[in-house]
Image 1 (cartoon, protein in one colour):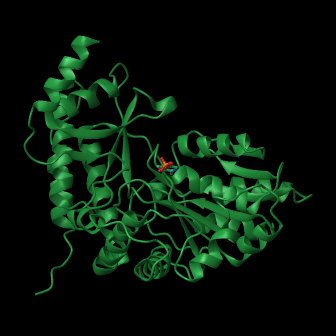
Image 2: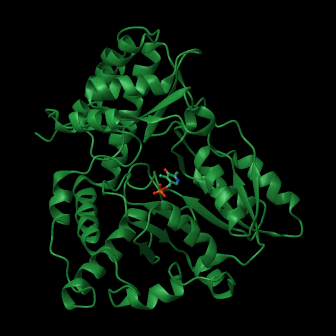
Image 3: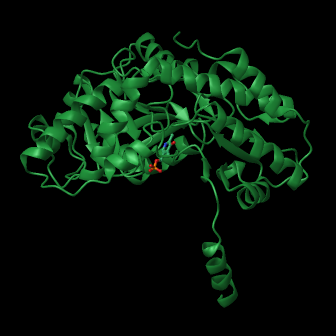
Length: 406
Ligand SMILES: *Cc1c(COP(=O)(O)O)cnc(C)c1O
């Protein structure tokens, strides 16, 4: 113990020049503009200054969800917003249908089960997003209409697969099923295109620390009229999560308990930054960086966990290491030598795979720095690979550089 403490102390004293590379798929690096926006005095959350901020973020966040409906903001991580979506719309014992896109879908199912819902999950191999045909078939078979909600993960952060939510909507409509559509876009919002209204999503769930470029600590429920109607008949006990408690206060710019005031300044700044770049440009940037990363992984001769090109994630790429090579030892060497954090393999992928986050406040050179660290890490760890991954990424970026105004 004493030795460990001494080592930790020594490491803390060692100055590391340059920025830490936080290349995990959330939290993502927080831009200086947002850090500065957050560095504000704490104000009276029932005063006039807060009211302006409240209106600003409650209106602004709708543009990010691409919705006209209310969005509830919680001082909580994404897990809280998962729980909020279920307890506001459902009643004890209700049947929900989920799809096992990966670790996060499985965790959400565990949460639903703990809360006393009958959570059914369509099993899958974690190598692609939601199969909308399987959802449609299950809904058609539910002739008694016992399924109250279809719950799917938009961007599965454990695997690097992005599901086509518009296809899930079509599946529900094709089966003429009345179930709500509840979507976890915790790691999608602000990075992958998400159209709450156009896709007919009833509850959209997001968090602050991924595409929104904020520190952890805020999460969101975007609603629909149908979700609001379901809330009227929901019999789950709730107060902290209750939309019906929150919304009357929100209409005046306030919250029904003390909100995370300083993080909300950051949220206002994040909304401005996304608007300045333009949402479409933000999504295109993520797609381009993801494609460059995949070109790099392919040139290394390594395997992308996601095998369905239509579901390749703009947010992260999960790389499977050759059998016999420990991905966590590799990640440790990268951290120690290059001061870069890569995402660990989650649950059944532990030790077998690592994740490269390419979301949030990232430019071409950030990405190339990250991929260089990965490639040098393979050499250190003795992971067999082809050279030239970074060169392939550079070639992709050069060939697809967005036109600059003259
Ligand atoms: C990060 C994440 C979560 C969990 O969010 P927390 O903020 O850690 O509670 C859930 N689902 C997905 C898809 C995520 O990426």
